[in-house]
Image 1: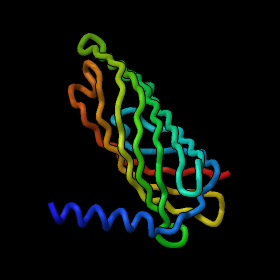
Image 2: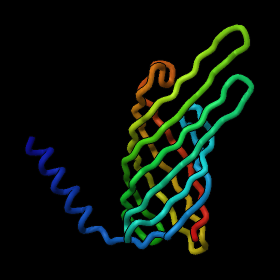
Image 3: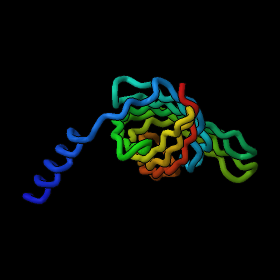
Length: 163
């Protein structure tokens, strides 16, 4: 218990001692990763303060046997590591739907909601370009969410234009 308390105090102290990095007012681009089978996402970030922002992602996939979409919204805190390197953490959730239909074999569809966490690292170039790598665990709620797997792990590479 003492170790957990000490770790919590140290993390809180680090959070307040970290210098705030002014983040871009807006960033628009792609988030490319697993997305639990949904595919690439269009990603938009909007600064809410010196080191806070809102990220909204819309992902979809349209294929021969599989159609789906997912929209996610996350509130993120951003801390500067060194120069253009930042790390961030956030919480949020979203809504998704999928329809999996293999001719004469398998038919499944579901609409679901999910809660998500987010942690990542990003590099802010001197030009208006931002590259990030993040990990987003998602806990889904639906009848057959992700084939009866309610916990999904999403790792993605993001590239965004800042304006």
